[in-house]
Amino acid sequence: MKREEFKQKTINVINELADYITKLEDKAGEIADDAKEEYNDRLEKLKEMKNNLSSKLDEYEQIADSKWDVVKEGATNFFASVSDAWKENYGKVYEAFKKEKTTENN
Image (tube, rainbow, N blue to C red; front, side, top):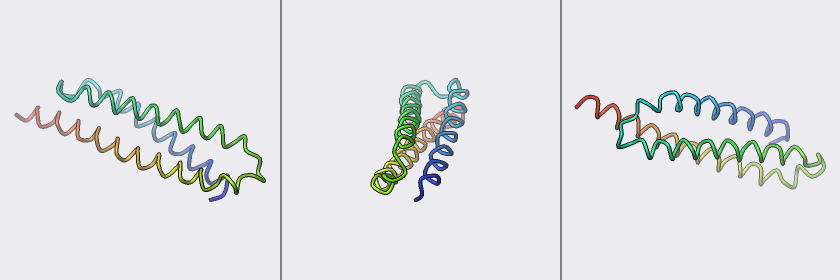
């Protein structure tokens, strides 16, 4: 992965996370009481993930072009771990909404 490609992908993920977090915050009142704590925990983890990703991007931007090849593998691994964590947290939030809908239907 080239440096600019990594930067753009990271910016895209940060923006997607920010949009997703905003949507979740807007829907927080719709969650069933028994799912609110887990929902809020997952929302906080997503915010932390976004902040960590922003920090890493700032860190990687300070690296000289000549050293990019050295850190490229670490950057790619970091990006993959963020992606996996996001998918896991997205799934947990989705489950919280399913609980809310099930409660409504009963």
